Length: 135
Length: 289
Ligand code: SF4
Ligand code: SF4
Ligand code: SF4
Ligand code: SF4
Image 1: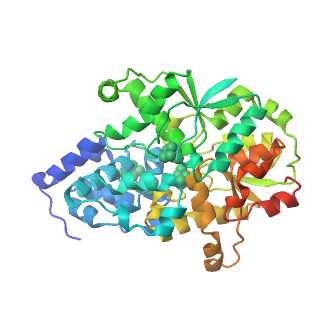
Image 2: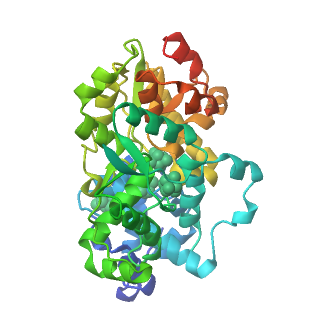
Image 3: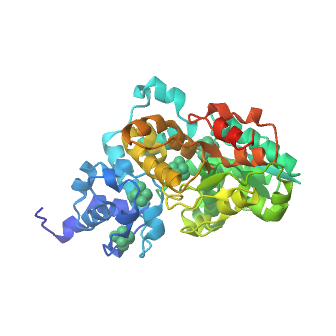
């Protein structure tokens, strides 16, 4: 992938909002890959967690917005726990999800969930899922 | 001893057996888990956006209720525990958020309550030796795989009551009950959490890694302290056995169910029959029910 850099792009509005909402300094990440090595959902992701943060560092947030990864992050905190630089990637994922949903609307339509799912799953799954997939 | 107790919404509905076993076991150990007079759902997820104060309202209201009834709050579900404990730390340590949340809910709360998981109470108030003395059944022939999941341990800077990479509290609990611990590497890997309701195939595979790892370590059953972990691990085992040849389903119990059984309590109110992989055959085979 060919990436063109400019100061304006690297410090674009979206990136600034992600930093503000997550409280994280994206440039602290030095791409060691520890987050991706420990991420339990990485096998199903199209962008690995460390790639998400790298693309954001470069101002390439469009690629992140298109990926499945932000929706597969289970907020398990393993990446944050193991990151040698103390970067809380789970907060960055949340900020990206929230910003995207503020623009494009909710990720799920509660009324469209299958009746069997609604009847069977523990309450906790919906409450946390609604909090993650609606804004 | 009487400790204010927060059951949470799942323990009041889909996971009643978890709650029943907790109350009865603690009563048998001389501790009354006194349900809070008023409580609401904690929200099941700690808000990770810095400007999301609204999601702190639910958990903080519970903490305010708890403060009116004592200085401790006992919690059974690891997820509620995570949300309540982290929210409490925000109220204790972050002045601007404390002021805004207090203003909004018309309270004056500064994080005074100590949020305790039931296992912490067993460790610190009862003690493993005393617990071992209260055990009535012989579990020596039972191999139990501890499953921590995520919320109990992470993030360690905030949850911090056990080593997050090598936790021991569930192992010590299992040993105190007289059972054997099945040591396996996936005990603190995430089961998929809420993703299960929205991307089932991914969570099935996440659960499979954990289940297969516990089986390989020779476990007869798994114990966990989170109703969603329990569901995710338990629910899809038939599908997984079809897909992964040679995998034998393994029962998943709540930690308090095993506690109640070990204490010799009548397990008929623990809803053992509500689990998808029936734990009763192995428990009967080992002479425990
Ligand atoms: S573990 Fe931390 S420093 Fe390493 S790649 Fe991930 S976010 Fe960056
Ligand atoms: S919080 Fe998300 S990105 Fe981080 S390890 Fe867990 S699932 Fe992966
Ligand atoms: S985590 Fe749960 S079960 Fe626990 S009260 Fe909160 S939402 Fe409900
Ligand atoms: S439900 Fe899964 S995600 Fe939750 S604490 Fe349990 S292991 Fe983690």
